[in-house]
Amino acid sequence: MLSELDASERMLLLKFVCSFAWADLEIRGAERKMVKRLVKKLELSSAEAEQVEEWLKTPPTADEVDPNRVPRAHRKLFLDAARQMAAADGEIDPAEQENLELFEALLK
Image 1: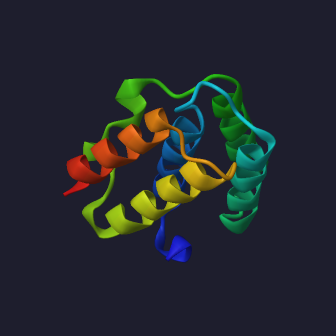
Image 2: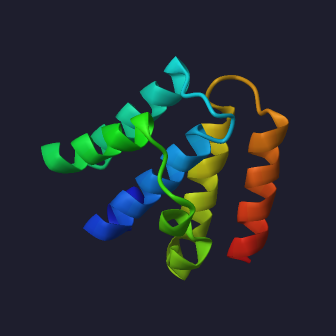
C-alpha cells in the first residue's frame, strides 16, 4: 500500500502521523521510533526526512492536516497509520481516541 503513494501523498501521510503523535501534547520515544521506521519504509529524501523531524518538534497546523486533503483511494491507509501512531506508546489517551474518532468520521 505504501508503495502506491506518490511523493506528496507520502509527505501528507507523515504530516498526519506526526499530528497524531502530538495529540497528547508530547512526543514519546515509541512514537518517534514509529515515525523513523515509516520515513525509512517510504524511502524519503534527506530533505523530506528533515521536514518530518521538524513536525516532531512543532506539530503541523490544523490547515495542513485537513482530512479533505486525504486522497479517497488512500483513506484506509491514512486511518490505519493514525491508529498505529495513537497506540505506538502502548496507550491511547482520551485526546488521541477523540482525534481518531473524528478523523474516521471525517474520512467517511
